[in-house]
Image 1 (cartoon, each protein chain N blue to C red):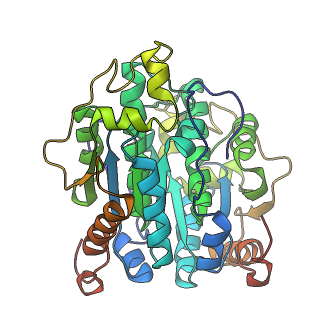
Image 2 (image 1 turned 180 degrees about the vertical axis):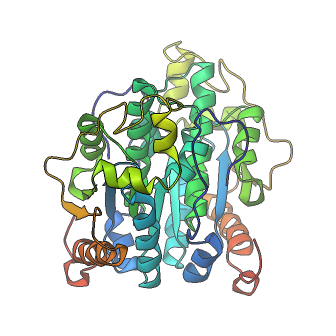
Length: 210
Length: 210
């Protein structure tokens, strides 16, 4: 499944694992990664959880990875230094790949401000990686400030805050751009559902597609 | 979902996530972690993959975490030093918890030789953690030596090899013990299926059980 240099050795590929395609047949949809990127306040969590709810109701196997279930658990040993941010995104990319391998549509909802980090995440499973850019202007995000983080960042209470004291590198070729600056949530959501159903939900494409 | 000291801050619990119990209803079975522990050659991988296949055919959502999909990916930055082995098991416990949260029966198949590491893995999700001890004598495992690792360890080519040059601490109170020393694979498998169906598969218990 993975390539590249490994620190660990003495690992043997194992036969007779359930193929991802068998899981697609079972679930009646394909799997993959929806990688949400955007500023704090751009709507990542809101849209991820609402998309999860809607697709769950439609019968999809879907799961959201976000700060709430990653930062407190798997990545609780990581802070916000440059090295830790890279490692944070790397691990999320690997876990998302496991979920895609297990037949899930997995939404990774993280600011993930650096192109290079997102590029590395994509590289793990390029054929099933969908970069979704939630595009909203900084001033709009700052006005929303749902968690009061921009205010704290402006007061200097949070160092290296994306958009304030650290850069956000917008995607150059994302699979999907959602304008969350002035579109209502319902519109954004409709576009996301449409995209997901088109990419993951075509039963007629389930045979012979790897 | 998680407790304890966190290095990262500014994380807010999010509402309206799909409850694990809703996933149980969808899948018609409960979720949880089957943590396989035992010596190299005790049958962890064989039994994990065969159990996965059988339960998949019975309609369960099930996934195996093992060296093949973890050591090459998420934990490819880790070696076999004591600190790295601890971190290896910690991350596997966290990922297994995400899968259990997502509605899966997840089998973690790793030697995991230290009681303290397994105890920490259990602590993440104690109510859904099932320690399964695959018990086989060292001499039997060494005779099987499916990957030729014991031979290499005896030649000194692999340092700190469990059972040869590093200890294996058998579980004291595992939820299930499978004698893989002289029982045929089919018998071991039958016991595992029986256990899993009893623990995860009772539709009448799906209501109101957290």
